Length: 151
Image (cartoon, rainbow, N blue to C red):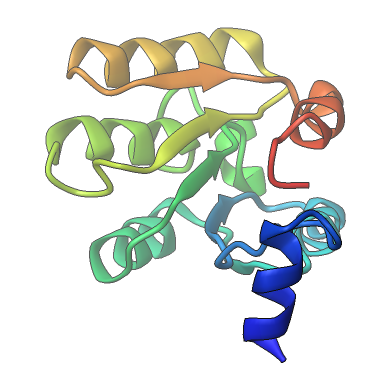
């Protein structure tokens, strides 16, 4: 059947099918609603979710991902912290990625927090280490991922 379809496509009687392998997506976020959104958005892909920086770093050490999405503000403990980028924020993961340049080298990194100041500090630490990362506020992430050539 596949051979017939291929032949029909070559002579112009059938359209080519775009078949792609699933992506491996990593999400660091403590909001269950965002977990659900990512799982719906990437329904044909593998989505791995962590809620804490420690859990995120463990998974980033153990697995390979095509795309990494990081939130800055995590856990209620962070909101009472004097430090804007303590170990309870996504900044800890951004810093770990910067300090471990061989890890997740081919993954695209997107910071999707609503905290623009925190996002820019995360982007800065990664870019300073030679990593490409971009900031897309969560409210614009729907539009950004909709424009993806895969979907």
